[in-house]
Every structure is written in structure tokens, then in C-alpha cells.
Amino acid sequence: IHLSSQEAHSDWIYSVAYTYQGTLAASCSRDRTIKLWNVESGQFQLTATLCGHSNWVMSLAFSHDGSFLLSGSCDKTCRIWTLADTSQVRILQHDSFVNAVAISADDQIIACGTAAGAVTLWTVTSPSGSEPLRRQHIWDIVNALDFSPHGSTLAVGYDTGDGSSIRVWDPTT
Image (cartoon, rainbow, N blue to C red; front, side, top):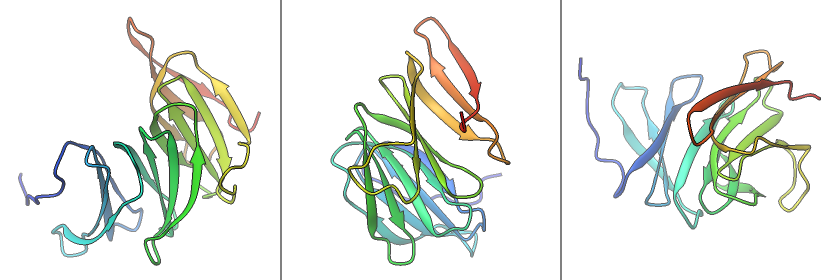
């Protein structure tokens, strides 16, 4: 059942995410922008356009408490945006395109997956330019990742060139 349609971006949309509260959604695009949408009425009403990435924006993840948004981009960054005033508060630099981002259930750990096959963990409070908590090389393109509800595992989807696999690992070790 089709409920509604909304003109959103000027180029391909790569990801859409909802807050856990269900009041806000975000979309990101090849047009290098992130759009925030009020969805309380059941319709997508544009509330803000976030600019700052210099290349395609590939992935999004909202914090569980609804206070911030992560974005991963082909500009080799993960950016943290506060939703209170839609400002960019941190830039986490990577060595390759950031294809996937996720946040732990306690909103403390950020995971980023790259086209170079790295999974990098950061604390939410990691300042721009800082070193990550951990970096693990998968050796293949990371296309998706997510924390388990209790944060005890991180599932990573990657392309091996002749197929795709999921690798599950403990983010605390």
C-alpha cells in the first residue's frame, strides 16, 4: 500500500533512516546532502538540509536517544550532527570511502565500514583528528554493519569479489 511520495534529492538516494522515537527521518544522497524530515503526521515534511560532505553521502544512523545523527561518505569521513540545532559537531577521518555507519545501543560507540575493508570503532566523544579505539581490516569492501541490540556483537556485511559474507565479531576485544 503506497502511503505517500516526496521529492527529496537531486540525485540518487543511498540511505533512509528513522529515529527510534519515530518522529524524524533522514535521507542521504549522491547530491552530497542529508535531508531531515518531520514524519509525525505520516507525511515527510522537510525540516533541514545538512551540508558539509564533499562527496556522495552513503549511510546514516540515528543515536538511540535521538540526539545525534551519523553520516558516512565517499569523502572518507564519518560526521556527527547534533539534532538540537542540526550542526556538525565532529568529523572522523578514514582512509577510504565510508560505506556504512552504526551506533551501539548505549550511544557510546560508533562503527564505520569502508570500501578499503576496514571497520573502525570510535567513541562518540572522540574529537576530530583523534585516533580510533580500534581498527580491524576485513580485506574486502564493507557495505553494511550493525550492532546487536545489547552491543555484544557487531555484524559486518562485506563483498569478497566472488560473493558476499557476514562476519560477526566482539567489538570490545
